[in-house]
Amino acid sequence: VRGGGVLPGTGPHDLTVDLTCSSLDGIAVELQLLTGRDGAVWVLEQLPARCGEVVRHRVDLPAGTRWVALRVADPARDYGSAFVEPEPHDHPCACWALAYASPWYLDA
Image 1: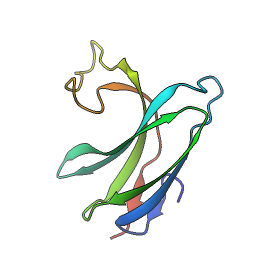
Image 2: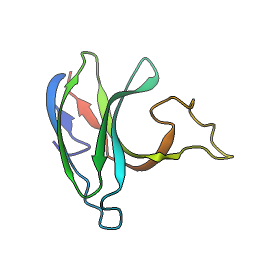
Image 3: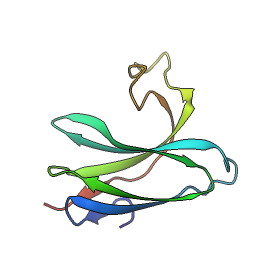
Image 4: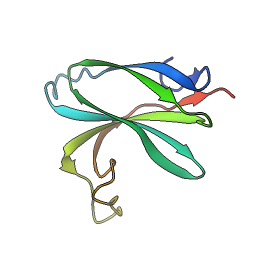
């Protein structure tokens, strides 16, 4: 199911991400699978990867998950600016985001 589509419920799903980006090939990145519940966003999975690769991973989406989104982050580059309150230093999203994919929604 492409980003923006509907996944058939919770449980195990196969994730395939094509990280083709010729200007960044070989750069180490982290794939972060985000979800939310009770008004908070949290990191469900963190996967090391490299630009230029196709990454395949099986993820188990817990019961109650309504959506998931993919964040491609540069763990070597700290996040923060004068305009945005940075995440706590040890938070998985305390690094620079290179890209976000459209979220997937889960059917009830």
